Length: 262
Length: 272
Image (cartoon, rainbow over all chains, first blue to last red):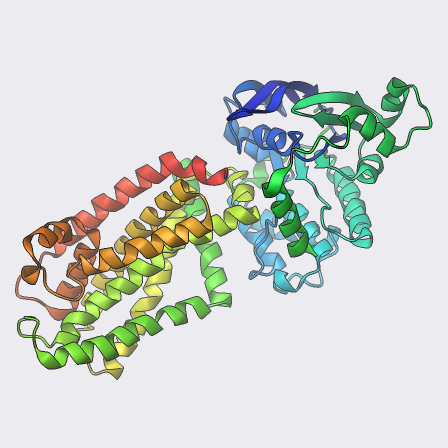
């Protein structure tokens, strides 16, 4: 997967400014940065929810600009916000997506139950999702996005609003799924411990650009401080903490997500 | 990408592109139908309003015999109009549910699957129609309870179903177009309130076009709701002169226009 010279401008704000990076097959890649750094915009452009002003994304050999449908067959996406339907059961949520992906009926049934088992929701599959806990909902959302065995899974803030126990459970399931299906995973987060626990390499974004990219060790070396904590690394590369660009919309949105999942 | 496992080709439904398209449209409808099945409160609530119109407005105005309705009672004349109102209102507020899905993230997730935007749009329009179809049952029940002489034979029911689907598709399409332009639920709700009453009063729903002032007659003639009302009235009352084909024709053309408009506008919904 490769991102080349991607740019996006909203009015006066250069949300993403000419970024390029490569994600290797099978790795978990983390996109970090403060609110408003351009992480979500980057992800949205990579999955064609948002048109880029400039640049190209190549996923599993398919250039996004020319083969968007082939790209969509090869990716799964878990948005930051709630993306399952609370009225339907866990099984039904998976069933609808299996159909949308165009899986054959026999394969679909087998896949649904295989995934329900892997994400630990087999027992509650026939219960309405509104009776699930936040962590269970997140696991279902991830399961829904990988029914078609995508080559690349995109996760936008996968554990925002979850308590530490639920967060750990999501991490473990994600790791199981990634190694089981040998998927490439790209996630955004602003929890440093999440990046450290899951990601082989991380890129730190700031004001639409990539400030640093590498393994945690490489970033420590670049800082010249081998004892640096993840928070130190973040503060060093993402600049001063006063760089607040989130604004009221980001705040309402992340709090709303947190409330729904909590 | 070298060692990622590809989905073997035989996993995929190898239907042709057209069949696949139809299946995707139906999946969107299926999702909505399953939701309604689990939680039909909204539809039952929607049945209350026509009941009030028929019982209070219909019976009061029917008593003064001030509105020329030919050889049928005012209640019978009003019933198809109130029925059309119920369909229009259900469909017009349907855009809000799409904005809700968008605000949650479900819409974005669906659009990341290999579904063409037009299949999504047509599926959503048909879902709104399906909601309207449930009103047919409520209307049959109401007309029996209130003893309003409507003709519910099999043919007229089939005709009514078709008319309701066309009306629902058009007004849901209009609602989605407005949702794409308004982008927030609050504004959408405001605009919905703003246009439903003028649509209703400038149609032939509660009085015949013939008694309107000339300027309103012009409005009524370009108001698609008039054609929905007229189609239902033709089917349920067996009026002397029938314009059923004209009514269907107008609704079909208007619906096709809405599919086109929405295909152009849809990308605007995804991003606030």
